[in-house]
Length: 328
Length: 107
Image (cartoon, rainbow over all chains, first blue to last red):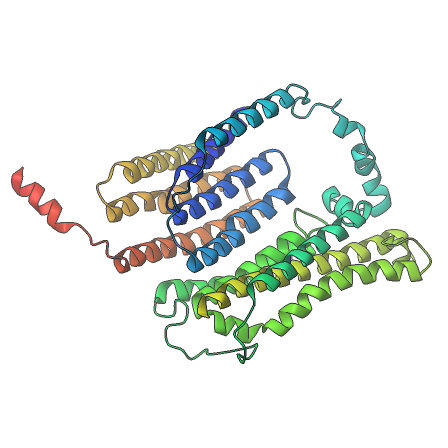
């Protein structure tokens, strides 16, 4: 049965991908990308990867669609007919496809217990999570504690990407104050459209609350800093779309956002340094409390908080960088 | 037993409404009638399917979560339809009343 669902979803994915490639309207392509991400999220969920599915739905279908639309507002809506060499492209695609298909012959079957991935450290993590960390969601245990270095690296990647986008996009006209706020301009956002505004106002607090729930419930269920950051950023972006970007900037100025971007990564690193100062290895949370397991809990909650803060800050910075670009 | 039958009736009816909605979205002549058809999947089909799953779940935490999902769907999808329709009007897609009248006169 699950194979049937999987094949169905993957077929839809292929159709969507073809439609993205074929569509000449970039607006339609962006919407189709959102659909692609949503299908992908359903696919992840089918494979029991609820955490990844949540991330894909929040970032892929939610935030990145808005960012793509922001980029579209700066460029054209139609694809420019390129002078591409069709035969060359066709050849490359064919060769790549053949290689990928050839590679699948060596792939273990779905859920095969003898697959290399199950033979490696994965089973050890699953065995030791109840004993060493004692939280129900093994994904969070792996992500936050066992592979804390990798996650730190990911946070730095997000941080670096945010800085890169800011460097590229936030070049401002000289003399313009940083927190330029013109919230009383009449045609800001969607303020004329009563229904989306009222419903949006009703929903934003709940989206925000759900983001906090995902953030702090990551130990017990699917969720954690990455997902929560995306959801909270989405709620602020929704506010910006409804009430105008200037008002969102007044609520959360760029100054604060930059502190968030750096502060989250700093918090993560500081937890590592603190555990070093307490006489253990970098990012070994066991020493953060008298009881090693309680220490692990504290450490994971703190680093997830750092992840969430950085992701929120970076996504909002990127959004504002796009939006501010349109006005100049 | 009765609950099982009831939930399957709900789920099947929801599936039928989704099918009708999809068919309408493909076959209707213009944007507004298509939206009208597609809104079927947002409203009655969502209510029926989530209702059916709620009956299956019984009185658990899952039911409360499903109720919350239903509430959010019922709030957001009409809003999305409204935004879509007003965006269509703004970009100059008029409801094609004239076309319909002409066809009726011919027939």
